[in-house]
Image (tube, rainbow, N blue to C red; front, side):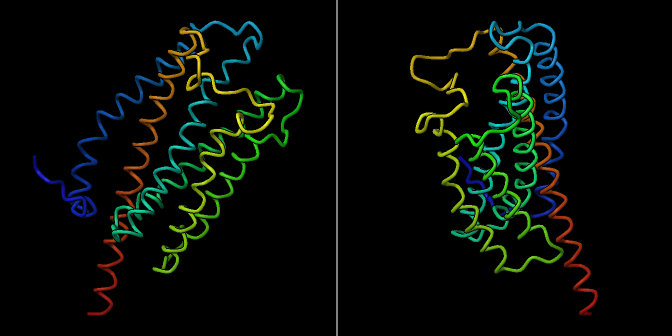
Length: 244
């Protein structure tokens, strides 16, 4: 089995070639999954016996919540690779995953407010799950504030990577907050003792929507990293021209 040269992936030509191969099938799969998922979620899936039609918010809210956590895992993993092995691709993945994670976290908070109003009678409550997700959004924004600058220094990269790793402690807090504390937020319905508590007619569109949004996340991440690599290459060319 051939060893993969991960450092080679950070080279513009190699990463551009990989991105060109992945983007067409990923784009087609993303469009198909989102179209079919929305059809099932909005038309075919039944209303909930307690929540009625409001339950359809779940098909955007839950996958967005999963991806808000997943994006942070990518950011923390990339930061660890950068700190331990000084891998340039790790830093790029972390920096470009952060804005995407912030967007999915914001969608989670907004759709949660829309879902919470008819269920709880309030747009927002200082619930353990809601508060920890809000903290996650602020972590994303803090990381973005450090890294998304015109010129980022080595010191800024290290500070941002350490911040990402320290903030990772919030991920299990978000996951288990409904079990550790008394909260208004409903407990887990899929990864739980006793098995899945969601009917198959709702579970199928939920997973399909998650697959479509996951493909969208990967597409956006690949395109952002590729753009950043080309930007860095262009800056080096400009610096070489000025020094010459």
